[in-house]
Amino acid sequence: LMRYALYSVAGQDRYKETRKVVLRGTDGLMIMLDPTIDQWDSNVSSLNEIMGLMGKELTSGELPWILVVNKIDLPKENRKDTNEFLQLMVDVGLVKDVGEAFSKYMDMSCLDARNDLLKMPRRSDWREQLDSSGRLRRDARPQSVVKAAQPIENLTRLVIEHKIRMIRAKR
Image (cartoon, rainbow, N blue to C red; front, side):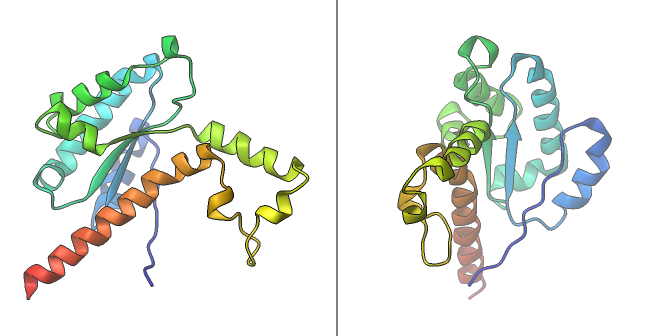
């Protein structure tokens, strides 16, 4: 059994000191960015701040991490392209090249997942989609929900793999 806590810190400048405290002693990092065009400078600033706080741990592999772009449901003309995020990861020094950036990149839409979940109780067969504990069965999850859960699942896997490597290295 593995237990872990997830912490979230807003990206606004006023939370800079809070981010420093939360990042201390962390086992993994999920960097969430906003693809809207007017948030680009804030994304660049956030990645530069993260590099200043934890660049060595991130680039050396000491700290498992992924970068997630939310709001992928926005029309393409209102958001930055995936390739721009991949290049940004290279430009700020998070990764060596776009190939490595692609391996760390995920996108999703929390709004789509939320909306799809809200539709579930309206279905006539919705109770059949629940397991014996009353939770939505994994195979009954809408694709948007699966996609929204993937970053947490992937980061959890990366942290576990990292912990196992650390334990084996001590032997």
